[in-house]
Image (cartoon, rainbow over the protein chains, first blue to last red):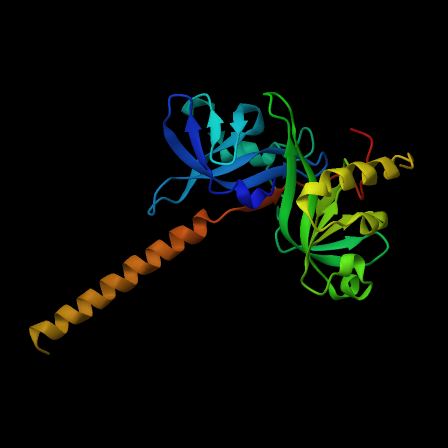
Length: 205
Length: 48
């Protein structure tokens, strides 16, 4: 699922009350897992809310709504964002910022492109984590010139991510071998991610 | 200036203010993907 499909989804309680809408998806850079969401109010005049939603409080995430038990499970947005930092860091400072629009570089120094979306994966049962498995990028000229997947500059491609990743500063770093696993369609992307992660762990598939 | 001149000025000012407010609120509501700070230089996977 793309994060762009999650933002603006209504947050609905089990009592059927529409209490907020998703604003930002917050994920821990080290673990590569979604830790929660910041929220905005519903309606044309509403702005961002001070409350956020931890992933543990989400009962269900579907194509039309995010389900929670009740309004009381929402917590201060600052807590949700700071919880995405390293263990023990509750300062909430030096958060990596919005990754949309950031450049993706391999550790071999090749720019793959610019992030236009983030791909997440989660189980349907409560308590399962929500993993960040890839970036959707607009291909760079360097990648296009290599003729990967017949891509031209600006073509949208999916880049798989390792289990753990580094997200800080202005660039997002991925291993150089990620270049070999770029994919154009979301349907087959799960297999690309598995093959890429197996290859990183030294298991040739 | 005639009274209707002032009326037009007031209406234009109101439209600009309301439009600006709605545009600012829409921008504040616009979502993104926020990443927490990282402690590792580069992940190679498999250690979670």
